[in-house]
Amino acid sequence: MSTMRKILLALGIVVVIGAAVGTGVYYFTKGVADTATVFFATIASSGPENAYRSASPAFQQAMSESSFAALANRAGLRRFKSASWPEREIENGRGSVSGTLLLDGDVSLPARVELTKNAAGAWQVFNFTLQMPGIAQQNAAQPQPATSPPSQNQPPKIVASTQEGDRVSTEIGDRTWSAGGSSLIVVKLGSTVLVNTAPIIKPDRTIDATTLRLQFDASATGTQKLTRDCQKNAPCIELSTNDSHYKTDESPNAEAALTITKMEAGKIEGDFSADMISLEGKLALHQGHFVVSVQ
Image (cartoon, rainbow, N blue to C red):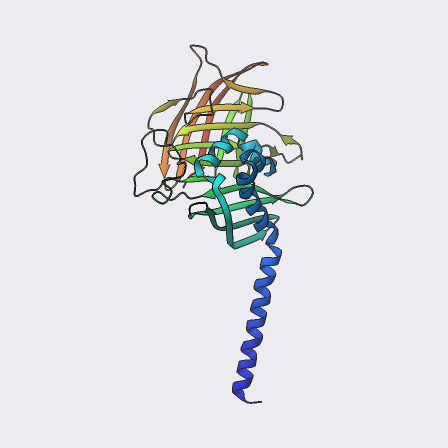
């Protein structure tokens, strides 16, 4: 066999092996890609509510169904047609896909979806990131900023994500509480940031079902008054514990405020406190602090 034939044969083997590896990657990541596609297809076919119910419990704890429906409507996801996920990864029981959503009207949205497995071993959406184009999306529902609209050179984004180092902590009554990392989902709509926490599995394997919803204007300076209504693009705070749901106390002398103390390179840091109330009684949140990533 000539040297040239040996080289060509070796190259042929390399090509075959490369094709087999690529096929294997797509085969083993098919589940995460299909789950991500079905999640968005469900929004278009049967509504955001059904897609929301298919997401992971952590996602549902961190974001209310009404907030998710509002986000889906603003992003125009009811017009979903198809998805392409060229980048796929599974590591340590977590999956992720990155690619493009195609909406009716030939609108393309860059997207990234992170997934986890439930107790039955089925993939579920944990969080996702969508980037909304500024000009090409004129006919779609746009994110409405809490204050002034974004510059035309900085297209509005809808982002749902967390980064290592993101954390929310506070004193709930006389109890120290904090959440961070995968127990957070941070959503940005225009200049409004929503920070949602999920239940936490403690070292003793018990579950702390305490969740906090904190919403604020990321473009504001000074102190923001936090209200009870988290269904609008306005500063607010809500707290849920294992057996009670608290909202801000609206009595004249009650306190519920947030102050942004630092903003740099996609990170926002601030302090908050609130007098809360539920059917079971009153509770104070104090020494509250948050550090979150936004894009």
